[in-house]
Amino acid sequence: MINLRDRADQYPGGIPTFLLRLIARFFQFILAITVIGLYATDLRAAAKVHAYADSKWVYAVVVGTLSAITCLVYAIPFVKSYLFFLWDAVLCILWIALFGTFGKLYIGEDPEGNGGIKRMKNAVWVDLVNMLLWFLTAVGGAVMFFFIRRGRTLHTGRAQV
Image (cartoon, rainbow, N blue to C red):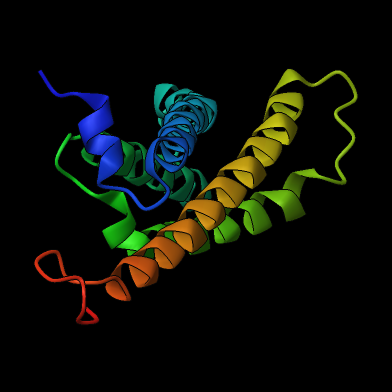
């Protein structure tokens, strides 16, 4: 059994930093699964009527899937997610593109009782929150990565790492 205190001690900032990142990863995972569900609904409806799958919706599902898988990999006990801050930045850029694409399509749209448009307007805001979370974890990971690199050696404490 893995002790959270032992894992948190490996993070700069200790337990508060570890818990903050754990909570952020949890919300990233939940929101990624939410995005997959919101956009896959339209993909499934298109498949039922034998229509083509719009590339924008496929892109949204792929970005959500990559984010969810990344969160699951980061949940492995020995993975220090702050070492992969560049991947977090790449995911942030993918979320920016997703938000921009669907924001342009749906933010100004009047749903007029159309449930599909209401769902997509809500999906746009979920995309925005996802983008912000991935931005924060990328910046936090970069700060922690460079903070650790400027640390002292374990054995003597004199040399810069």
